[in-house]
Length: 510
Ligand SMILES: Nc1ncnc2c1ncn2[C@@H]1O[C@H](COP(=O)(O)OP(=O)(O)OP(=O)(O)O)[C@@H](O)[C@H]1O
Ligand SMILES: [Mg+2]
Image (cartoon, rainbow, N blue to C red; front, side, top):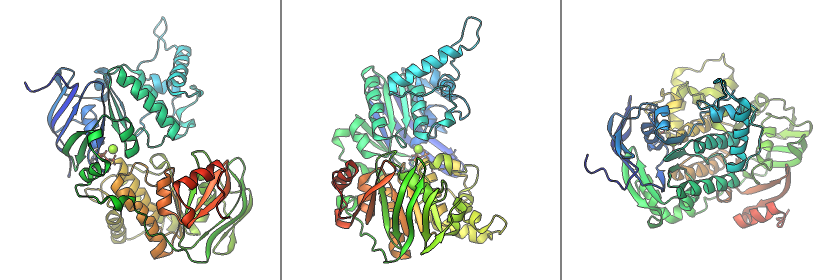
């Protein structure tokens, strides 16, 4: 034990974490210096979240030692680790949906009055001040958490974590649902905390963010420690090779996939469809075998258009044609019958059924469409599940594993599989690669294009990452203020043109 160094606030050594049938960590190591921002990197399922949970006592490690703040510790519970000065924002937002924002921030440490009763007024006032001063958010803290969208809930979880005095702050994919502006704010806070000597563990699949904010990087692969590096000494391409365990050709990542060549026939057309406050008189069409992107800033109405197309919030005026025939769309079921599928953005909240197995999750939408009472033979279910596990490289011990025991990124892949299994004619993917590691990201992009090319599927691709849209889409609808303002196609599609078009300075050839 003598080698424990004063240079580190935290050292984790030879950490094993075994679940039934899964060796999530094997001999993992992690060294954290005081006042550094340190990224844990690795593909989906590499063991990042597990390492965090071993540190915070969510899991009791199978083997290994943890040296923290001058002594060896054995964390037993998240509460205990928090009391020791380790503050955590877990990958899955674990706040209470039915409590107010203020209650969520102060749960377990409520301000109390003279007779020990909770001082609600002070609590609300403190919560408001915290959110507005630290995060620039002016929201009603007496509303229940559920009232706010996921990105806001994420910010609230962050506010709670930074408000408790800590020596280590752990952020496990905090930015996966944040806008660029919100991420900037978070980075500003992280820099302040760092200046105060606090160490931060930051997990994200956005390489850009890692290179902006992190001093050092530790890479995990398949539960093993691969190495630790100064960020400035580790070129991106090498980081990716270390994560994937193979040499990566730079061109492979940057190059355009060969795009789809749509047929002449439209699959879906809309004529002046309006959803009050959400979609303003939208006229557009999508051809069979075409990959179309909806580009626009967060809040521009990209997702609202998708929700209108799928019947979640049906239009109140205008017409929709599917395969040339006018259809009445009142609910998602109508559109499922018309062979549309929608893989939503907030997958964690809207779509994941954690207690069901991977197999059950994959067949869920198909089963709903076929009617709950038409039982699908088990052999067929197994076949479908195995096919998609293989196609999307979903990391599972077997198809009966419960979904909640999969890593975050692998859960997302299961949801994508669920919609692919319905063999739709139009697949709407809203932010399909958020939280997905770089290797698989390019596979999902390629998959969208391949489905269009080989199966004639129409695909709507919605992403805040312009590079992703440029790589995959043969046409883009530019959305601003809930309206389509122009379209870009083929060679016009570039990051620069998208930005100009959103700003209103480029109008394309339409
Ligand atoms: N409670 C559990 N029971 C069984 N297996 C688990 C459990 N938690 C995690 N695992 C498995 O451990 C492995 C590592 O998962 P972990 O969540 O640490 O990955 P990760 O690196 O955080 O991935 P992601 O980038 O997708 O979030 C995965 O194979 C996962 O299925
Ligand atoms: Mg994780």
